[in-house]
Length: 342
Image (cartoon, rainbow, N blue to C red):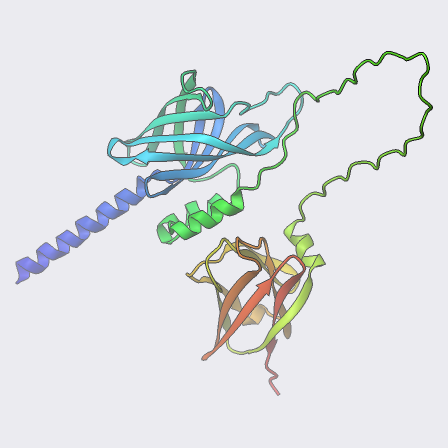
């Protein structure tokens, strides 16, 4: 009996260590180095045997191009293949510094771990539109700290704690795909055709000038959305005890909804991706005012508008529920009021 218990214990320890090693050696994460002699930061997220994420070709924090990436991972051969799928963002530095990432690339690299804590992607890159044209080598090392911050950081940081859920990965992918209009390097100049003057030209007709083109306003920041949208009170909850625990879920079908929370006009949490698993917020009662307003601002409307959240609050031994709805014109508001001590 003792030998059986000992064997079971050893088996559990071996399986646990194997799982930790596998998690430490996963391809999901932040990679930095060079592709085709260009500085690159790559964020890879594995979903089954497919890969997605984003690539930054950069000279400096103010001079880069960002692409969404797609690809797949051949796990038996430890081979990763990905390509720059869509240009999402372009930021130009001072003239003469260079223009990183002008050409979309397709990369193929071996995923190897030469030593403890060291992981590398080594291979070659080609033009995305012409795989027969080699464009240099791939040399990337895995790192724990990104230089560029975006929507994928949440998934990478929490990948082994539930963010590897396909619903979450797809939801973040929907949010990340918002390409920014890119300026052409050389403006196209229209040259009117030469018209020969006739002997008897037609009378001149006055033409009303056309209205100037309407400029497209820059997207609102989350602070501007909070300030401009109407706050709709949903529920008032009395608070007692030492802390409040709030849990946020997607209220209906998981469709990529994300929210930001403001407490008493101050942003406290941003980029909360709503799923069937709770996002938990704990607030110490000692730091709250007598009356407090918690406002849920929709960052997007998901694929099924409006943005809806189901909130469960635990205060003392009581449970409160609220269905919060936000859109481009209004935000849901919960008021927390301390009970009078008299």
